[in-house]
Image (cartoon, rainbow, N blue to C red; front, side, top):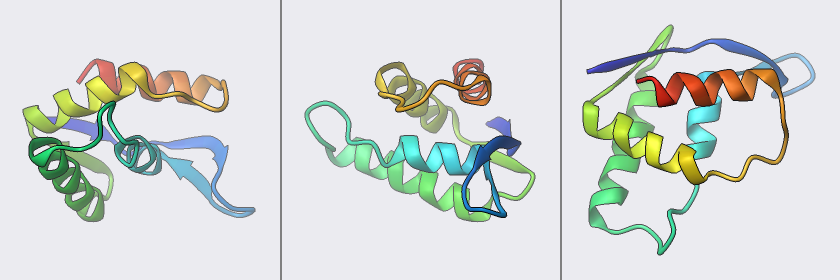
Length: 95
């Protein structure tokens, strides 16, 4: 089991709401892997969605889910550069 603190970032989700690590995981998790989803990756992605729905202060991931996210993070094309995005990427890499 791997735990990721659901930190708030400086990035704005809305005018009054900040983006959290759960929001960033959701964005990364929705990214289609190269070659598309297969049964295994689809199951992992859907399990991560469930974990995000249950997350409060901590996102609890099974080892396979954490490894799946690490693989996506390695190729995910970020549309912005920001210190909180870098901190998030490093947090996922260190799971």
